[in-house]
Amino acid sequence: APSFDRFLDLSELFAYLDEVVATYPEIATIIDIGTSFEGRPLRVLKLSNGPGKSGLFIESVIHAREWIGPPTLLYAINELTENLANNQAMLDKNDFYFLLATNPDGYDYTWTTDRFWRKTRKPNSGSSCVGTDPNRNFDWKWGGGGIPGPCDETYPGTGPLSEIECKSYADFLAANPSINMVISIHSYGQMLLYSWGDTTELPPNVGILDSIATAAMEALYAVRGTTYDIGSIANTIYLAYGGTIDWVLGVLGKQAYAFELPGGGLAGFNPPASAIIPVATETWEAFKVFAENIPPL
Ligand code: 0X9
Ligand code: ZN
Image (cartoon, rainbow, N blue to C red; front, side):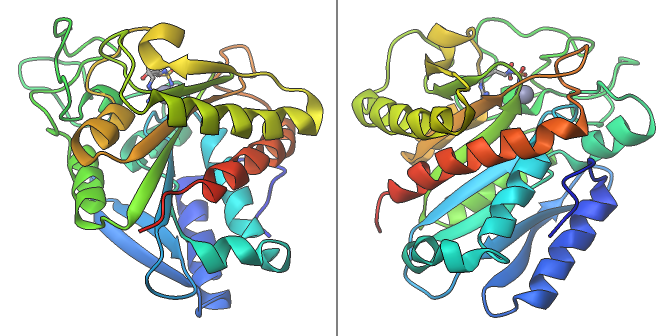
């Protein structure tokens, strides 16, 4: 099993993925879906035990400082590999894709230089401020509500999918139509969010989104009583344009959810390593409910 008693840096995350593939070659493959601005791989672990299955794609640290995400995904990977005996039915029914470091340049920067960096690391022309908010960079209502400058934490970039990390992610989902559900892991706030972010109107499939989300949060609550607010982005947290999950629903027509995992530490984004197991354990129970509800091919 990977270490759950501390956070892992990018090279340790990649090394662990290599170990999973070496140990479980019959089910695990690595798919590099692109390369970040600074040249790091956008590395997806696919777990599958046969063709013809619909998939669940889960990603973390598109916002670099939200460190509780990767260990939560590592825990799920461990459940589907080392602990597969207890979860065999899940892999018999569906494929699973894990993108641990959606914004690897930013994640690396949080280890080397600035623990609370959020954005990508691409410079902005005409500005000394670096980076774009990748969760404002998707091609759905991009730039709505006005475009803040490049020094803003929610700068959406020069245009939709201007960030190679977002473009690679979007292209991969579009090219793999068997992926029928996407979960985007953020922190913090104990919220389970669905579309829309750009309007307080609710999407046409809100009934199914809300019922699956509610069932998942009941399973999560049962572990240790953690409560989540459930609802649309705009109604639950704030208006946000160009977000990942709105693009997945709006453009691809696939179910998508975003977690705001529990906070911790003085800044909320820096829980102690002792939070990993409790958060990952309860979140895994929610993942199982989402997996049960992946639409079939
Ligand atoms: O502002 C954001 O992008 C999200 N909050 S965070 O603190 N993680 O930055 C909220 C936007 C809601 N959309 C998604 N989480 N996809
Ligand atoms: Zn975030």
